[in-house]
Amino acid sequence: MASKPVKKNPRLASGRKRARQNVKLNAANTSLRSKYRTAIKNVEKAVAAGDKTKATELFAKAQSVLDTIADKGIFHKNKAARDKSRIAAKVKALALAA
Image 1 (cartoon, helix red, strand yellow):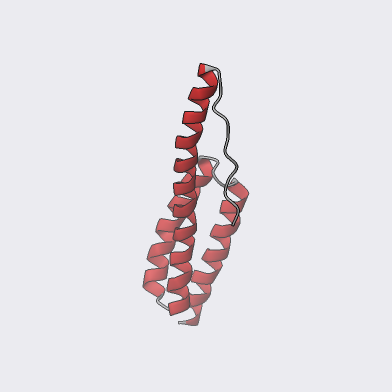
Image 2: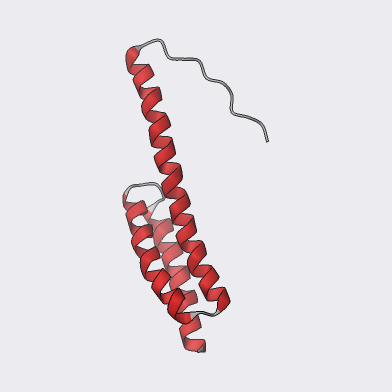
């Protein structure tokens, strides 16, 4: 995979500060994005394993994570709603099958 192009350092102090802030924000957003995807993955694993109680418990936690991250604007609120709806349907199907 190609590495990122090397960027020149900004001349203005405000530009240098903006570059510093971008590094911090990028790291925070990446971490939150990862947390979001992990929450969904954990619920889907529990559903695949057929563990109804664990899936329901993880889904409750995942809902909170999805909403929080959508509110911060890391993912669009409609994407979060769509993801929540899909995992809710999977958990419900698992509950009905049992």
